[in-house]
Image (tube, rainbow, N blue to C red; front, side, top):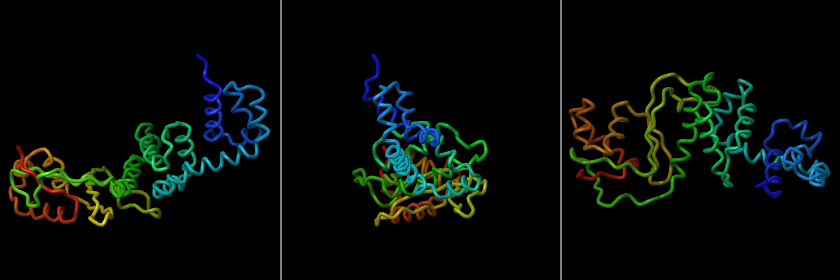
Amino acid sequence: MPDSRTLRLQRAMASLVLDEDEAALEADPGRVARRQGLSWADQCSFREQGAGMMTYRELARMSLVEPLETMFPVLKALLVEADTWNACIQAFLEARVVKSGHYRDIAPAFLGWLAASGWGQDRWPFLLELAHAEMLEVVVARFPDSDPPMGLHADPGPEDLLVLDAATQIVSYSHAVHRVTEAAPFPEARPTHLMAFRTEGGEARLMELTPATAALLVRAQTGPLGEVASSLNLPDLGPIFTLLRDFYRKGAIAGFQTSS
């Protein structure tokens, strides 16, 4: 069944916004209508409205790029220095991966595209980690509020499971991407473990963890604290429980529950 005219018009407008060759579009705005098999009248309409079409292109592209510039300033600084930022943005736009109509979903779509495409990661092995780290605190800060599970208690015991707050994220990177700045966007290559969490006041915080602490926080969600600590060669539970109580007070841990 042939595509409807409405669908072909939508595809023509998408090409008008997303295609790279702006000079060719300015010279003949009707080319996108022609490529979609639209009528001669439609092609003429695109040409007659050329100035307006190019203004629409500029505004639409700006609305797609601004969230990326805001969310990924260090990534942008890295790629601008290498004169590849525009190439990255164009490759993302041409992939047509933004399906949502919500402004907030553009940056996650970009991160997903980086992960799926591997763009730039031969040259910069830390690129995906850097982008993920730049989004991390924002995701945690905006995480939907929810009530913790019933039956949690505040004081950990050897038989307890650990329950993180719903917004808390434990992540591991191969580079210290949380230490970079726009002025110094190249991270140190070293294993890095982080906990991103939200305080009671709604402020996102980032804390660097030791490998053992990161492993404990992950594994103790499904195994008793005493057993997990022993498997990590952490026989003294006293300091561990002190640390977990501190994380609970900070808001990173929702509480503890007796394992069944």
